[in-house]
Length: 347
Image (cartoon, rainbow, N blue to C red; front, side, top):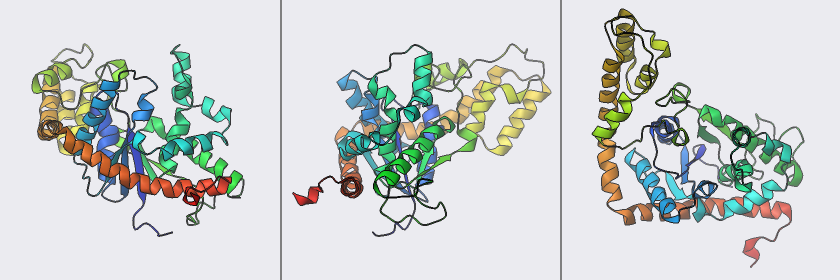
């Protein structure tokens, strides 16, 4: 097997509505930056979305919208593989093969499943087996690294465990692990990835201070117009400290978001104004608004232009799907052979 000149990273984003600030700082920007040093493979996770989405037209539209968002944010399709998850059916075959060597106990410990149960949410089999499909998404492309939010690191550890289970069962790897961690990958077994977290933006607070999420309704969409953006920013929850009093910059949701946009010098200046008093939360929100508009207005213009040409977005996804499937077929042929299944090349 030809050795890659750069390590490969793989990540996906669900098309359940359009991305928000949390998606941008937690996944999109780190993923685009990682593409500077990695062979980058990024997909629109439409199969994952089916655990909750029941509107076919919305799923199709949101898939194009998410792709347009990634492109508008700076993803270069000439250097980065971008595709729809469902355009590579090999990932579903690998999901089944991993399911056959993964114990129920591991999947039951997944945070997302346990959280859904604790909140009394309906949990279908797709929700339960979500970590197995996620593992297949990663392992099917021989990923070295997976950019994730801090709360997703458990899934990467589960992916590594599933790769180990498979390698022990079918490749004769030692039970203590797939290979010695210090040894080079032999190109035969499933490769165990590592999670890469952007430490200063792993968890992005929403309007209420909780993790920003569409399901909480506390998010700020990435490419809303200036009027709605201002409404959202001004709705960020703050405490009742009066304008003239000093304020603690370490506990303010507004400043937590401001840090994601501003330079170290700008953050230090705003923190000093908090501590000095005579500076209200409304002033801080306007400072955040200015930073956000400066950062996202050019991307919003690119997004609008891309969405005006859906055939162009589709062409990017189709080309990326072909490139991704070429890699996935190679992995599937290896694992089919290891399992005793007939290689497709046999006819």
